[in-house]
Amino acid sequence: MHIKWKKIIITALDVVLAIYLIMAVTSWNKPDERKQLCTKVNINISDSNNAGFLTATEIKQILEKVHLYPLNKKITDINPRNIEEALKVGPFINTAQCYKTKDGHVNIYITQRMPIIRIKSSNGADYYLDDNGGILPNSKYTSDLIIATGNIDNNFARLYIAPLAKAISAEPLWLNQIEQINVLPDRGIELVPRVGNHIIFMGYLPKNNGPWKRKHDINIFVRKKLSRLEKFYRYGLSQAGWNKYSYIDIEFDNQIICKKRDEKAEKEEEDALLKKAQSEQVEDVQRTEEEERDKARKEVKRQEDASAGLTE
Image (cartoon, rainbow, N blue to C red; front, side, top):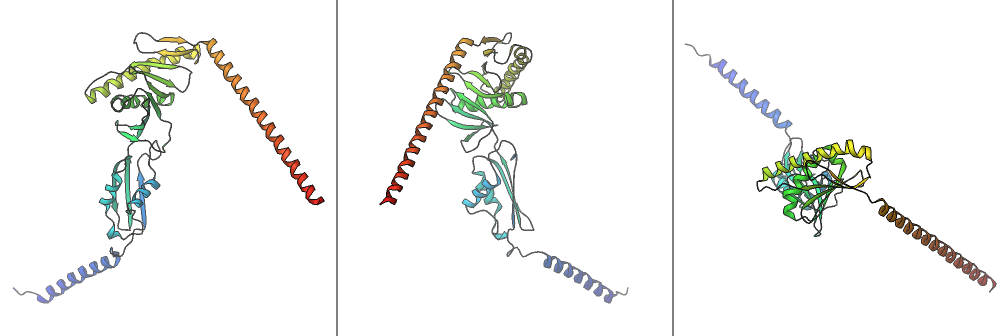
């Protein structure tokens, strides 16, 4: 059999030439990573529009502080793992992911620990709890979160107040209505609403050593209590008036105990506050008049001094 060597050689050369051209074009189009700089940093933060602590500016400042902010640095000098580890040290950051792109960009994705309640206990502690019961340090953060006050230590806050706040926040009605949780010395739970001049006594949270069972029991406890309270709001207070009662006790399943407001005492308190306000107003007026008289005396003396100078 006659082998067509010439045809084989030409075909082989064509293949080699095609491979060379492909590699050449790819090489020409591919930027030299040794010279390529990072031209853009994209920082994405989960839940940044909700009740989170973090902003893209703060992430940038964290990286600048440790000299890891990648903008205008060589792509080859940027280590995504180092950036991730530096960010994970932050108390408000849950996870951090970083990667480089072929066009010279660096993308950073952050998930943050979400605060659900602020603790301001009677022992002076002031911090936040996230949705897993983790403690977040106090910061410049301000938001319309529920505040828990009273007899609260760290363990009670993490194990009981966190699931209590989470259960309350799960319902939009109560998230908007309840502004404060107060823990009494015997660990009884009071709620302070935004609407209505009264205090709600829930009773005592169920205790359980198992974390899952404890959270489950507290969630059931809260749902049952607040369901009864909602019905009382709808069919009771809406008819009697939101300020008729000063204390509403929903501890027991078969009854709601209400304490009427002491209208006489309240009237005396309002009169005392009004009298104090009027007294302060009079003092302000007197102070202002004295300041104006003093100002007038100084002006007269200035004019007299000026006239004496012209006479001389």
